[in-house]
Image (tube, rainbow, N blue to C red; front, side, top):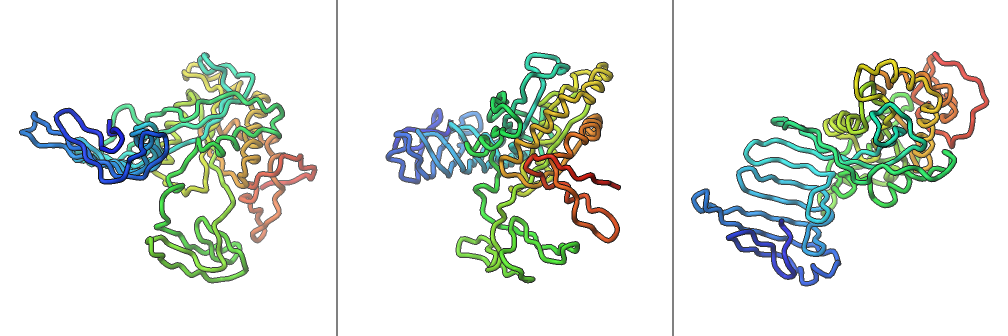
Length: 372
């Protein structure tokens, strides 16, 4: 435990603690930005001591919020990310000293319509929304049992009534249950590219405030990248929705998608979602899961999730469907199509289906459309 008392760093068995910051009120519940150091003597290793350092916010003598933990022992680690009550909860990135194994934790929003305490074959009466931390190995060796999942906000049933009024996803954003590593990180990289379809420049995480065709990037005194006049931070939100296949529980879907997110390193304005449906927990129930994938109520629950995403401010969604999850998407499209704006942009003589990713306000689209 790296947390210590007021005015001094924590101390381990046989060691002494020192503190390099002012923490006179660290135990009164107020957040304090400080540096704590812990030195522990280890008689089993010839008297070689262990030196631990924490730099970040401390509440009641424990790391809380964004910070960095450094432990120079053999199997210690250097971890930067979010803490709660002295424990890293993610998102965070970590490197182990001896093995150089790289670990990464990401937060994923989830929605499920599976009934609780069942074998994954029965649909529940309500959609439930939550947030999970998924810790993954991304470099070096891969530990047994990873990815690991624990819930930041356990899935709770939606009590909003009609799907078009659902604010469950908005509430998860508002109470900071979902976080991304860029929420606190400095801007140290930007991607500048040319959008050939629109014939203009694009800058990651930014949008043009005027019709200019150039961008000026500079470095401020805090060594952060700044984009010049004519550009502002993008207010748009995008989402990636993952629909898993057969023989998946909610945690299975979170593990699979979380590993993808940890390796993909998506920017902060793209919010990850997992939709969990009754896919059973055994491939022997293939025909049961196949029937569920064609169930109209399951399709309506997926539409409920899309509308909740829209009410949270998400304007564009990318859908990933695996195996039988693709069957759900295709068979639910007659219902889901009312959630999207009609295709308007064209590239030559071909329809640009990417514009379908803009979620509408949920109002039915009366215009008949052709695809292909």
